[in-house]
Length: 186
Image (tube, rainbow, N blue to C red):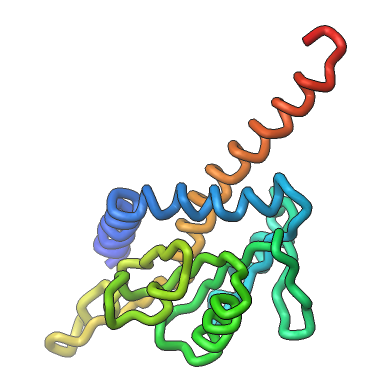
């Protein structure tokens, strides 16, 4: 079974990488606006995708300008928010998305479903990335048609790391530009 799981996860990551590449880059650019300016990058994570905020905060290489979002925070125009939720229909995530949209705070969202007219979260978000998961990825070994293994965290972590690589490159490029312009030898 582990070979099948490896094959299915590899296929999932490839689908995300191929179809969401542009959205990942746009999301990194959106978040970099806060880091380059005077803003903060807030992570609003729901359910098991709280693991992404833990990685961003406590991982070997923490996310620059990171803060966890909570309702008591008063967002500023320079701030950016990224929402990670298993399903685009998650009511808490939608309440936050509606609030951010109403307050003109740019944000990104990551959820299982693809962007569509029926996906309110994707409509509200400045950028939207799909986890490319409709259900389990492995057939149950004894029950016909039932799928098992729901690697939402793994897919979200893959997306997080892809965003972070782009983000870090953008932020480092801006720091290099500032250092060059500050140098008396430039």
